[in-house]
Length: 495
Image (cartoon, rainbow, N blue to C red; front, side, top):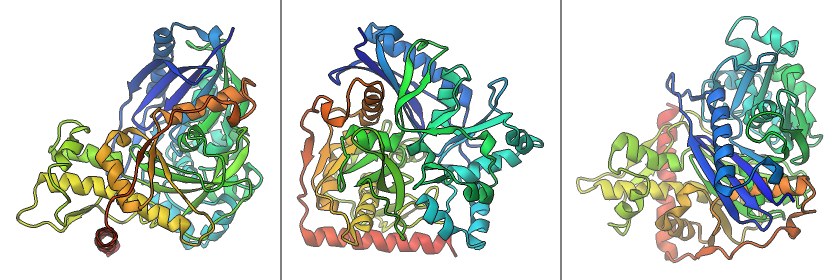
């Protein structure tokens, strides 16, 4: 009897695979990191083959730790880093280049030219997205132009393009399925949010041939049979971009329910229901999953540097040896001593969307030390989220009563308390931290017919709760210092 779900969480720095029983309990786990390539300043790349090898290794390892095999699987779910794109040969399956990662800024000039041509309002109306190097379309076009003959081959369907979910599904299915789901497609700048299909005008503007793109499917359902590798005999029945999967994993399926994921970046999604409402500010509109995995919508704000800030303290500054040490270091002082860090290492995301902004530390005095820097780093993660929440709720169309949180940085209790204090809202940390993987598993269970909807999934344990404690004058002063610092780095970057 099939009693397990396997979920692949393919992230920016590594792949986690979980085996989950029908009650939602994790029975097996495996993880593998993959290489980050930085060939030029602002460029970030991955090796698609290395990612695929990591998926196969971790899938086998997770099943072994759970003591199961593919015949025990109800279905397989995939959650993936979004916007990252790969190109591969349709005949051999070999990547034609390294994948361009969502963080990569190499297409800044391309999107700037399109903005100068006046295309941004039309693209926004169709996709809910801004013109930015972050999204996939310009990345695909850049790769097609990076070597002679690629574009022509893509027009003939001989070279395929897709986000990482497409790459994994194509490989796992033995080249039988070139597919993606609505949530991932909504992050490419090529899908019309209303129709849920590739849009001819968008394809023309970004110069991406339809022949190289995958078929768009619902996030829950029969997506592809698995015909090779350690999962052979099972089927992919759930698929979503990692942030939409996390939203579903928190069971946020109604308007006003919100989650924030603290990973390499920081991603806030607020479910808005089945009605499409495209904004005219810096907050994006994106596809999300309803209670049965059907296409609904969310508003999203993205921070480019969250966990990356702590990684910088560890790897480049050298004031901590592990990410976990940041909390103990920051706790040695009651506050940052007036030090403010703006971690715009690759520009600023929402609500600013300023690719030219650059990181800075302001407010230093002779008495400032590494404890203040660590505290300022944690503050910067929380303050970027405050900007997102306030931007989303400014017009009163949506109210947020609490913030559900997940991701590696949520292990930091001090960061979670700082977040509640600066946001002035309760922060609810899921007991099961693997919310992204759980969301993909929930979609796979629904897609396989094991559950009819989110209400049939066994309930989660009560979350850890962090309530605001900071006095209002102190909170306002912290927000004022932050916004002055943001203004300074934007002026510097755009001088």
